[in-house]
Each structure stands twice: as C-alpha cells, then as structure tokens.
Image 1 (cartoon, rainbow, N blue to C red):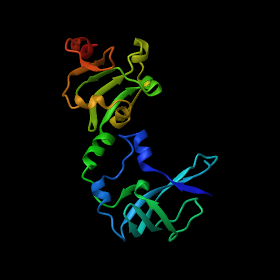
Image 2: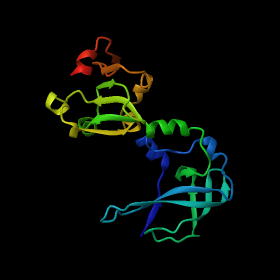
Image 3: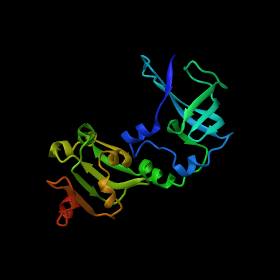
Length: 209
C-alpha cells in the first residue's frame, strides 16, 4: 500500500483551532534520539474509509529542518515495519514528546464546549451568540445560532449539539475579542459582518420563557 507524509502546516491552515502543530519552541529542542509523530497517508482511501496512520519515529539524523529516523511503531495496514528508515521534514511533525508552552491555548480550543445548532454546522455560518451560566464542567454557557432557525427549530433539542469551541473559531475567530465576557451577554452580526453586543437583549423573556 503506497503512502506519503502529510504536511501538518497545510492541515493547520485548513483548521487552525482544531489541528495542533508543535510550536517552534518545541521543534527547536529536537535532537537525535527523540520521538516525533508523523501522519502516514495512503494514496488511495480504503473501502472502509481507512486513509492514514499516525506513528512515532525515532530521530537518527538532523540536518537543519530535514530529518531521518526509524519507525517506532508496528503499522496497522501500511506496507512498513518497525525499524524502517523514514526521511521527513519539520512540516511533517504533528507531535513530539516535549511539553508545549502553547498547550494552554490548545486546551481551551479543544476542551471549551459550546452549544451549536445543526444549521450552523451545515451552513458553516453563525450570526448570533448568547452566553448563559454554565451548567457543568467544560460548558462555556455559549449558545451559537446561524440566525436562520425558526421557533419550531429552536424548540427541538435534536437540532443542537455540543462541540468544542475550536470548531467555531475555525469559521470565524473574531469572536475571541469577547469570548471571555461573563454571562449574561448576547452578540449579533451586523450588515458589515461584524459582531456587536446587544445591550437591550430581553433576558427576562429568555430566562423565564
């Protein structure tokens, strides 16, 4: 089964808040003997959807941003075996064994949960955000809507899911300006595509409805 190494910077460009890449601080620490994780991608997707394996490689040579190493995993399906020599670049490294100083940011993107309508996920667009008190650990209290949902849609809990805030930030990260504002607060997108705070939002109707 033929394969290639994925470019993690391209993957991060597509999903900047949900696809982690090691910081330059971590990459600069790498030395011979360290383990790094690479994504081995099949050139043809299998019938059951299999298309890639993430595996560790032990570095044996470093030449600036080019590396050589030995595979440290036993592949699940790929035509490789533990100990095989792998040549790769810094652009192929998706993880290391070092603690990353940026991990707190990534923990926020992955672990902070928001309630979002299916319409947002289908349209990849959101125009209204409301923050209530959190109900459980990890729940940010934010509810996110496309703005096209009608009353019947909003009354059906099956139309909503809880996801990581990183998915929403991939769509529009301008909300980072106010995402830490405490409840109760509500924001709406204006005709210019910018979010503004709704100062006269009817909280009595919302809380008692």
